[in-house]
Image 1 (cartoon, rainbow, N blue to C red):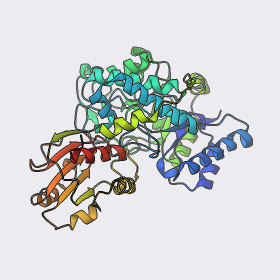
Image 2: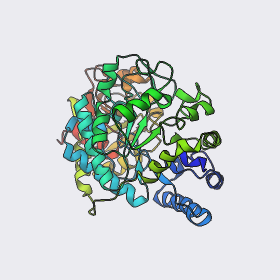
Image 3: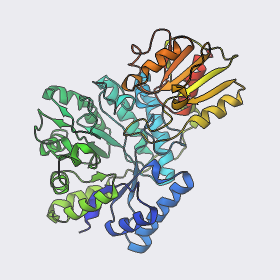
Length: 466
């Protein structure tokens, strides 16, 4: 039995040749890619081809399924692709045709690159201000999340790329980040089932994979998070009648890694109804693979069948026109407080988040793209990062400040002080729930994403062009 078959591993943080050596030994059935694994498309394609060659030529077996978190918005692993503005924006528009189209676009791009599995969409309801969700969610309304999630799944899978409904049965009822701790959802069973409704819609739409959350739902199972809970698997498999592939969230996250041993993780996931254990850390994946060898092979037969057959066929032959998504990205913003800047005069653009924005997001700079676009239109501006902004003390000027979740960070006092004597517009790259934190004298535009086109569109709205 090939124990690595039941693992989806990451390789980030490991030197390329060493990673290939470990993969050659473990032979996982799926590899999840991160932005840190490559710098451009040539490197991405080279990595995929090296691994495919390792499996096909050296081992004589089918290559692994390459997976990625290309959700859109602020969670993208391939930033040069034309990704969607954010799920929250799509929920605000609430046009299932547009959402389906975006699934087609994403699927077309990933399929071309040899990536057949997208760990998206997020189907969590935004009940609380959970900083790990925010713009990743389609919104607060269950029906909106369900409809748009199903539409995205359909578009993605028609392009031959498997979709993943996550994080079952819903991560939106807690405030804690499962990357850091084990969240406990103390709500009633009715509330949990209400949040799980979008997953029913996803299953009806034919979603190929479901990812379970690292949240402990006290009314469902007071002892284990969903990823390690027989009761959670029963809810998905028996009550919701899902017969497709089930995968855990990454088990190197502290919610489980700090509370359960490797042996416990294996016995309570693949040992139950999970088909694959996701683990972004390659070294931990080796330990998991070793533990899987102790599982009765009869329990693994159905898992092998599901893993081997879960990829959808490509049904769409045309390439979705990119202009539609580019146009929506430019206009996908909303002004909540209309204070404008004069485009004919000098202004500053402050990028507070030109680094990693969350546990889920990965670093990719938008500064150069913004600068190029603004220069091409002959605007007189100065680009500034967070460090320069902290020491900035010029007054009587125009300033556009771009950042995510201002209320969650130690910066509001500085913004309030500097904008007291300047004409300022704040552009939020997340959801628009922090308007009350930003002082009334500062304009407020929600861009819903740090995608360059989104931010540029918000800047142009701040200039009163639309």
